[in-house]
Image (tube, rainbow, N blue to C red; front, side, top):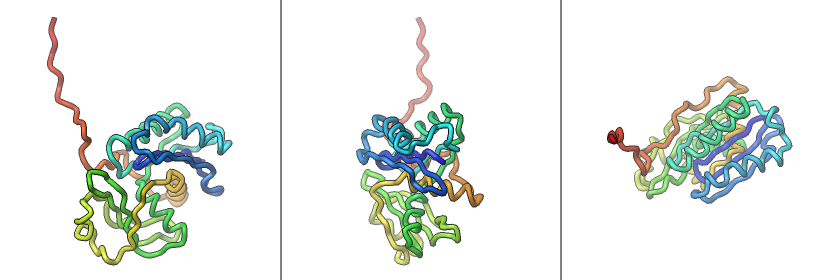
Length: 211
């Protein structure tokens, strides 16, 4: 069983199991309240699932793509919870979770996942379908463009079924992680997919202060 956390859009938390599916899931759509609600949602999902922390096998961290401020809250929460519980962290691309959910519902064929990146831009990822285990095959992206340039950014754009997702489900990302582990597929890397620089930058070395 896994605790899954994603803050790439709103805040989504879930407890999942490979055999039982999504046991509990809760979310908050407000993109300005990640830090306020993520701890409460973790507690809520654990209570609803009835799964003791000791029985979790790991924690899933959604690595984006997503805006810097929100995305880092979920990653930090996943890392902190895993450290305290003595569990490993596994990482997934949230677009892959959205695609997994799409194919798990019975869809087939090429899929273009599009999510809001704010600043009048969108994130996108392209898939040519799912493999024999239902795991999505990402062939392009994630990328970041203004909507008007999406057609030129995605090779073969006209051949994709486009899905604009308003939220990213931690439950779907958790089930994707279960499938990746079961079939020996790689997880996402440790670097978050911000895809652009944060609004606030850290200045250079501070000036030396003397008494």
